[in-house]
Image (cartoon, rainbow, N blue to C red; front, side, top):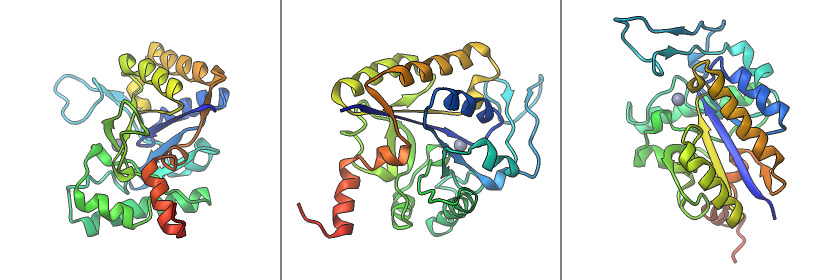
Length: 247
Ligand SMILES: [Zn+2]
């Protein structure tokens, strides 16, 4: 049986457009975690910080968001998932308020995609016990954290606090965990932000070479993150409970 590979990318940034081109070219599946409340009517403009500039950047590079109008076309054929309405961290407000931000993004994306968008990625990787429980109660399939598992299927007892295999720039773990998942018939799951390529062709090549290699691997099968999460023993126990089948 083939082993599974999935990937997800956060924040709905301009660089996603180039990234989906790579995935389309190589027939890969991918999931994109969006915050519709931070995406405006028009696209933003990326920039590099100047001396004295304050505020967020990725090693000096400031990406910008795609517009709301871009979502249907840029992400056509890919899985969309909630990343909260405006990237609200789980510890920034009471869980009962916070879950609305997760659901507002999900419902917006479901309207655009015309299909269920039950995946989730935790803004800044922050979780609390109350919001993990709220995410489960709200019917999400999984919630991806920024933690990592050497063995995706064995080390994810809680799908709402899902660990991926590695970040796309973690070149040390990337291929060793890929090889381990292949050997075990498991799941290899990598993630990132497309802006972390920072317009460097060398980094775009790293991404495209990895995607091309995986697509050409006869033992690998691309799946969406939601499909991968459903393979977890915990998810399968949940399914049995829901369907009333006892094994
Ligand atoms: Zn984010």
